[in-house]
Length: 118
Image (cartoon, rainbow, N blue to C red; front, top):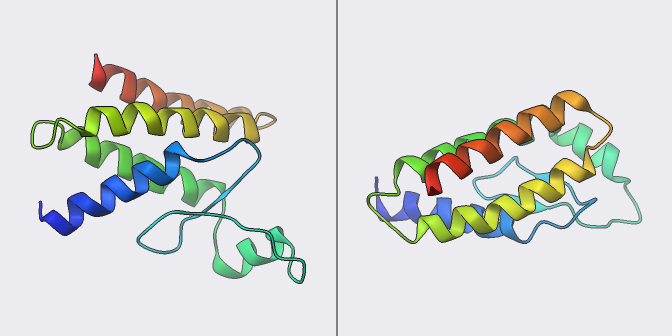
């Protein structure tokens, strides 16, 4: 993996680490972004226009986490970044607390992290 790809994973793990409860992610670009407030266009409309949804968010998080886990031997610092990202994923799980499927998928990602950092 190139240094740029490693940096992209680290940046995305750091964004996940800072994700607060009741915040959602914009996953349409290389880097994750926390959905910001816009008084003109409601969040739901912006996400619809971008084609961004829960399913895409979870898929992208899973790819990032799996990639990081696969690279732990190349960069031991990823363990710390994964542990920190877990906090944001737990916050996202609370954000979607009314959807059992979403919670289960996020819990599966959390278990992956736990197993990798043991």
